[in-house]
Image 1 (cartoon, rainbow, N blue to C red):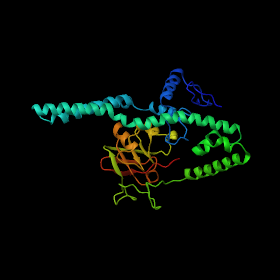
Image 2: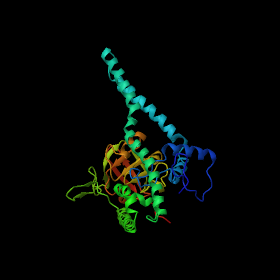
Image 3: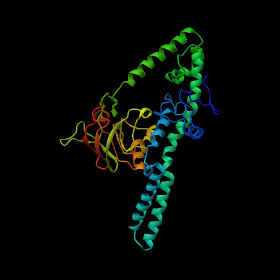
Image 4: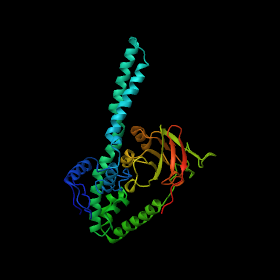
Length: 338
């Protein structure tokens, strides 16, 4: 079996690169201890976690070094705190000066403080589930390694292609050659199905019980209007002009600071990219989906539910994004590559 950390989690496999500087290695180790159970598509127990392969995290850190000093995350956070305090002052100033107004201001400030302190709790259920998966996944990988040693599986990761009842029936199924062959056949069939689904380029937004599917965004249009404006659902206000960066996998993203991130959709593994993005466009999503919420928290314009955004927009295009109106205007085509 692979080496493990003190808590039984598989350690990242050594690579051909130079060792990390001690300070960075220590900070990264602390981060992975706390959050290494997260990853791309993390709700799928079979997906690789940051703790197993932190390559994309290191790439994201390298991109952070390119962020101007006046736009770093701590500076932006303090700037956001100041805007929030100003907005609260403006709100309470409208509540009057009499006894009733003073009481209303007090209640408004108390409510605002509770929202700031407790809003993050909405992530607690999902975070707890992913923490539990961070315990289950290493245990299942260890089982997979045992099945490889027994000649039942080819790779430890194939254990995630077995159903729970099949795992419970392993002692019986593995007792004879017929049972082992049955498991191999099932794993092979499911691996082929997974590979076929991985090549799917369009995922329906809505799949009805009678087989009907709907691909277009509920707030968007299939084609630009007469003026070349593409529309979607406005979820985070603001306007920005910038170059498009189409990203299909956050682990291989090359997003530069200020570029507009265009992707199928996001989950928590995409969040580090938001610190560099100047705006966000997704093919799926609504007002309360991950990308929309994080875009508002980070103060970047966002439009979601844009039909086939990753194919209609191309890396290097200059666009104007209006997160309040839900519109995208193409200003210039990408420069031809040499």
